[in-house]
Amino acid sequence: MIGPLVEGGHRVVVPDYAGFGRSGKPTDRRWCTYDRHRALMIDVLGALGPHDVREATVVVQDWGGPVGLRWAVENPDRVAALAIFDTGLFTGRVSKGFLAWREFAERNPDLPVGLVIQGATATDLPGDVVAAYEAPFPTAESKAGAAQFPLLVPTREDAVGAKQMLAISNELSRWKSPRSSPSPTWPRFFPTRKPGRSFATSSRPRAPRSRSRVRPTSFKKTAGNA
Image (cartoon, helix red, strand yellow):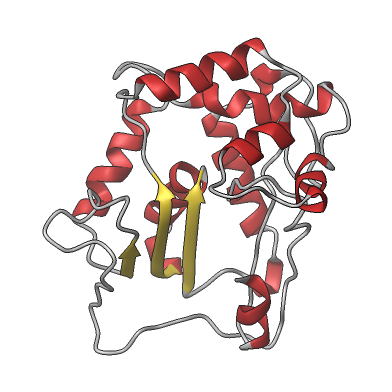
């Protein structure tokens, strides 16, 4: 997705979360919190200086939902459109399958990243692709952030983060500002509209364009997290 968008004249900003890709690797799992990831995203997007993010199309997937959509609802004047793929806002209800994955991550700080990625795909990945996912995590200590992410998902309505994500979901359900294109797997943001459809407040879509291009730090080497 990144290459064609850049070639089409769009400015693409793809930050790696702390603990992933080429970003710093905290070694203390307790350092990684939902609020800290949100704060770091604010810092990153605010540090672009004269290339400040405006009229942005916010594309979120996986943990990009809780973090990216929180940024979007807190900065609606900077958002032109949303694209929501395979993500969710976690408000305390989780499946038994997720609880099993959470327990696995908690018990295995030396997370087998390649095995996890391979197990989450419908087809076998080539060895070089698996190696690219594993590359940012050469030691058990470097995996602290990745192993902690599943533990950040609230498993009770009174758990840390559940209240914030419920507020985001409520805000999105009545948000009329941007164009929004949720994937078929996440229709609850806009219950009165069909998932997969573009919801416009104007007759034409808006997309950010800029001659300046910010290249991602590392796309292939980042476990799918943004």
